Amino acid sequence: MDYEHLLSQDPNNTALQLSYFNHLFSSSNFTLLESLFLKYLPNNYNIDIIYLYIKYTEYLVKSNKREIDLSAVYEYALSRFSNHYYSQDLHKNYIEYLQKNNPLKVRTAFKNALIVPHSELNTLFKDYEEYENGLNKLTAKKLVSDILPLYQHAHRQYTILSSIIDFEEHKIQNINLQILFQLTDFELKNPLNLPSTELDQRLDMFFNVMIDRFYYTDQPYFLYSEYLISKNKTDEASKIIFKGIHENKKSLFLYLYYSKITTIDVPNIYQNLIAEYSNEFNINKETQSRNFKNGSIMLNKPIYYNNNFDLIVIHYLSFVVRNNGITAFRKLFNSLKDKNLGPYTYIFAGLTEYYTTQNLEISQGIFNLALERFPDCRIVSYEYFNLLNMAGKNDSVFERITKSDILYKNVISFENKWGSNFREILERYLTSELLDCCCYGKSEKFSDSQRCASRAYTLDNYSELDSPTISYKRYKAVLESFNFLDMRIYSKDPINEIQRQIPSLPDKNNIFKIIDINEVIEILKKVEMI
Image (cartoon, rainbow, N blue to C red; front, side, top):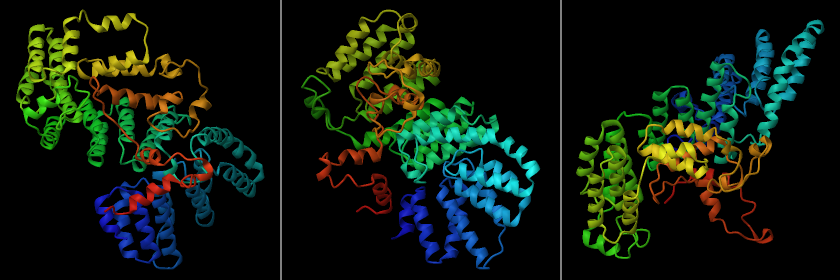
């Protein structure tokens, strides 16, 4: 396998890196292996790579090839992964090393290992009791009793986590997107009661591990940035999203979300997107007119018409009117009229004029222009009619009426495009009592254990089948706030997409039943597609 070529195509695929490193280690190509460790370790959040690095350094020491302070190696690894869900071997091996080489640090190492939820808590606690009794039985009882409450608390959190992830498999690849949302909710509640600084360190590690696991999707970047924004670290949040954009250049959601949290380089980003999408979809007006003859843009869309292109233009216009004012908005809209804009952009521009200036005359002018360009497009006529019948502002009505999930999402979407209370309404939605029920008409309550239980749901039907986590509802609400009318941004989980392609057969005839889909994905990542 040509690992170098594959890594040049997918440089942040740490599963591929690990496979390459194992290959180099087994073939004793230590010179190249060391150079790659130097290159990748500083930004590594794959714990299996750090385990291999420790294995390699131990080999060098045991074979007398190099004098290395293994204590420093373990301490470096623990500084990065002490709180990891699969750090149990890291703690155990470090303690065993210290017992032989540096006994003065053993007690501290035990305490650090016993406050983290992992699968070896019981074993390590028994080992700690034996260790203290072996030193001094008179002081052992007091020292063990001091650490007992911390160990018990960590074990309770481990029990909860065991209903979400599989600690026995020791495979981070088994964490899917649904589990990501559940774990995010769990971690943000600070279940270990950590001080602020230690909590930040644990959460930074958690989100970076999740980004490493799901570097090819937008969800972990979004969740990490939302956490950073809650800590008033907007600059850091924008850097995380920019990193996500670099890894997911086709994720329109990350581009649009980036423009919500920063103004840095946003106009250039939108201009590049417009150039890319407008060049891909061009068509003459004759074909455009012919394809709209059916009277509805929902059927038989013109060849060039692309939801993403109009959504890009709409949110660029939204960014400009929010940050530069109505004059800049009008200038930009006029400059884009020759870019094969669809009817949605005209509708958005007309509504923006009304919402921003209350100037019905200018708004009508834009709708009339839309009717000229799309005379048989029903949605233009429909929205034009709604505009003419519009009365009053929706914010005063919103405060008086009974809230629903759909209502909240509509207001969040409105605030995203035209308002100034986007985040305020979003937080009210996420802290409302609606979180205790499903958003599809169900009203039954769910216990914490039910809410945390790991289910084999796809991302698409997750919110329909169980009470969604707060993190999932946050992601879904923000994602959908970028929709406009019936234009949608889609976010797909590649694993679920493959799962949906597997035929539904009776168990006795289903040869696919024994397939571990996560293993298939990992294999596919390593194979160069023709």
